[in-house]
Amino acid sequence: MTRSHPASSPVRVAIIGAGPAGIYAGNILAAAVRDAGAEASIDLFDALPAPYGLIRYGVAPDHPRIKGIVNSLHEMLDSGIIRFIGNVTYGVDLTLDDLRTHYHAVIFATGAIRDADLDVPGIDLPGSFGAADFVSWFDGHPDAPRDWPLDATDVAVIGNGNVALDVARMLAKHADDLLSTDIPGNVYAGLAGSPVTDVHVFGRRGPAQVKFTPIELRELAEVPDVDVIVYEEDFAPDEHGEQSVAKNNQLKVMTRTLRGWLDTEQTGASRRLHLHFWHAPAEVYGDGRVEGIRFTRTEPTGDGGVRTTGEIRDFPLQAVYRAVGYRGSALPGLPFDDERGVIPNDGGRVLDTSGAPIPGLYTTGWIKRGPVGLIGHTKGDALETVGTIIADLDSPAGLSELSESAAGDAEAILAVLASRGIRFTTWPGWLALDAHERMLGTSDESPVERERVKVVSRDEQVDVSRAGTLITS
Image 1 (cartoon, rainbow, N blue to C red):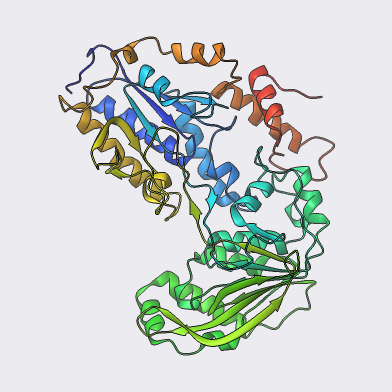
Image 2 (image 1 turned 90 degrees about the vertical axis):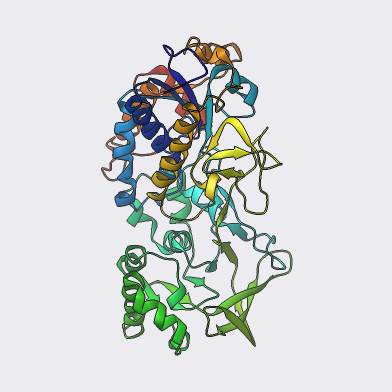
């Protein structure tokens, strides 16, 4: 491996974002550099005091199967190959100049956590919410409001992906059925007081074009005291859709599940979850707050598209949640493709406004390619970006413009943070917080024994982490 800095010193890399994308990138990079006969020193920064990003704050609490990914991420961080530094906000606590001074390369893995816009009149009325904000609330994100206005009996969820199903399921589910999960006390109290009776999920396309996964869809039928309702009119012949289903086993399973609910007798449950297809949102209406949503009925065009039939349908309700996708956010000092919501890049190399690579700056995950694919797809992103970094390390010109001071003391960056009064957290601190949350799950104050109870307050998370020992009072 040819490098522009002393061969005896490690390649120092900072990764911004400690979710799956950042952790995978760090682990793969460490192995790749080692295989090339060199050494890597990798620091993983996150704005939150705890690691795991989307897994901790973007997955519904009743999905322990998905959260099992934490076990493999834990092993990667616990190995000591990557150093976790939390409660540090890029662009505020550390600047791009700081990172360039102390590292040979920087990988941005900040994901996409902002709700995509839905351009329909009335979408900003009180009672209209973004799915990402709601997910942050029920997952106990420290920067989310502690209270959520759950005062609607009839609710609309717009979208046909897994996030829409998560939102709908959490709205329809009885709070007591979530007591075995890690939901914080404020979330349980909010859901327990919800008067909801009907949750309606709307998609502008048909059953053959859903973006759910089979497991997520089938889980709806397993929610206690909730009836799932579909409508015969939404299953009219769609030749293109039928061809798509014939070629895709997942779609076969899901259309079979959906059609099966047509023949399922309702149980008289106290809550109902309705799935509607061929409905394009046209307007959210109300006098001062949401009072209903208006749709135009759609139909297939025969080539996979949809067109309006001209039929208008109104659904009186009191709350609307849009789950039409996430968007990345611009980062200080970096170019940004506002149309796509990503950092412009070529194979992970960050590109300037002229399309030329910026030496030493890289990206991976959703901020690189957009919020598509499942969590596991971030491994492929990481492999590509790491391959690009290795190629640049082997290129005489690849990292030639980077500061030689990056070969210095690995503790220097911690001294910078301390000098600025930043109460950063570390991996041993996370282990203390993890143990504290697990202890809360088995305490006498918990109504049922559970794996953990999340600490919501940022200050409390930082206090427990920095103390490095359990706090029991």
